Image 1: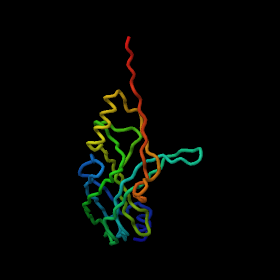
Image 2: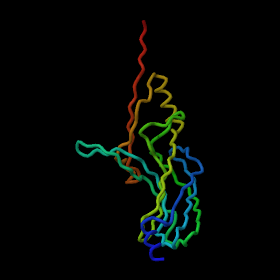
Image 3: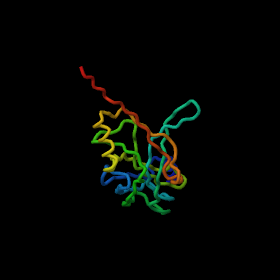
Image 4: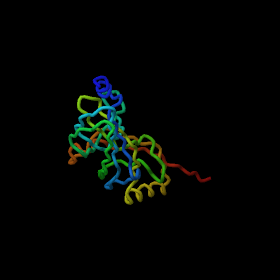
Length: 192
């Protein structure tokens, strides 16, 4: 039994978590709905808490270097401490609000290269490696954003690339630390 507890504390045979999203397509200001499925491992374990959040892969500039980092920019606690019995299963439904300032990752059914956002799930386990899960979501533009993007397309601009950079929006505290930056090119026509 002690050997099983040791293995579970290292993650082998321990509790696991899987998140299933009802719908992966969302808009800023909307809600992503889903269910967290917790499965007990080979031994009982003390769970410290369960949370879900939104995570983005962002560029961080430090001096003359750039590197990628995963940033969680919103987080909601779904449950407190409890003891998860060996082999027990628990399903926890949730609704996670998508902040208004969440960057768009999809336009007209096309995924924007360099724009990655997902629902992160963390099951905090006492004296053990935490179990986690990450499920991608597609953030579509709001109607007003879509109209603006369509206007640029009508003017001959085409999407070229995008990325997210670490930062924060004043007046929003620390709830969102990612900003978006994009570049585009304009197709020129020649008359002749």
